[in-house]
Length: 262
Image 1: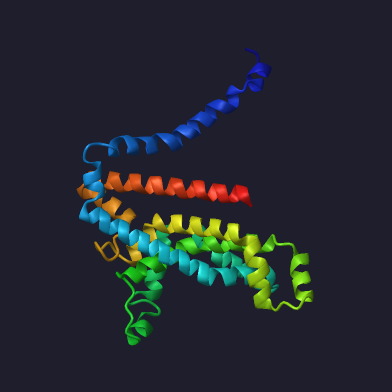
Image 2: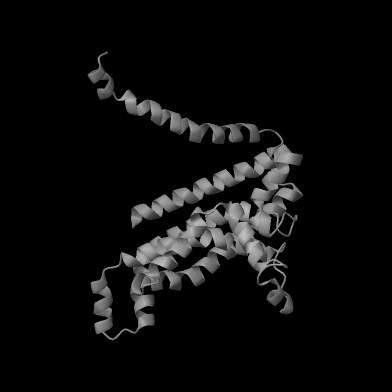
């Protein structure tokens, strides 16, 4: 085969593509094959697994709702208000997405820990955050909420400005414009961002273990139970890993469906 034929062949694209697909597929397949044995359900419904699953579902849901409540106004402000500081605000919001989770956890601990920068103020108010369920939510918020804010900001920017101007001409105030024009037009994008945030919060590990610790029933979410199970009981680690893979797959399918309907 001459040089021209080699570069004209489709295999020059298929072979590296198969390598990457195999890298993604084979580890997940290995977890599925190892987890699906006679003891899978015993491990999946063990007290440790159920406690971790319950805590993960509660904290990730609270995180997502908090991101929607506080992140939606912020995204709207960034999309519609002009200020010289806007690029810096956007950089600040996007930074946790690219930060190593361990750095995020350390930053939270240094800020809100008992000996942290604001620790004495929190102690004076009778508030202790580290190694509590609240710390789990804060860690998840720090790393996952930017995904929602980013999606919401893109959605608000994409709304036709003429629709906003028409609503203003008709006498709509800023709240009516937001509620009756912006929210209906961006609802699917906002929901997609919320799903991504929920998925990211569900799988959060690094920031949580540094800031909240790994206390069963208090701060031990599914990723931390998997980490502990890897050392003590591999069956529980595999069972919870499979549950997370299935949940994440379902949520990603839902996100793709929402994106196609936009």
